[in-house]
Image 1: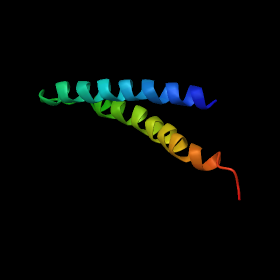
Image 2: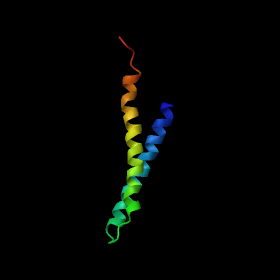
Image 3: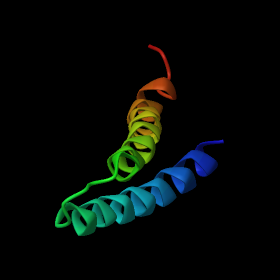
Length: 65
């Protein structure tokens, strides 16, 4: 399962980067669509959860003394 989480985390990084670039591209125009700004938040929250899981993984797998 950890392998899948790592792969999802990598693809979320790509998705988030593209969403931020799209947000900056639209930012120069006057009417900014709300969905463009929200499109960066969806992968960001998923990115947060997978990142926290990957951060905690070494501590969860540590043998107890």
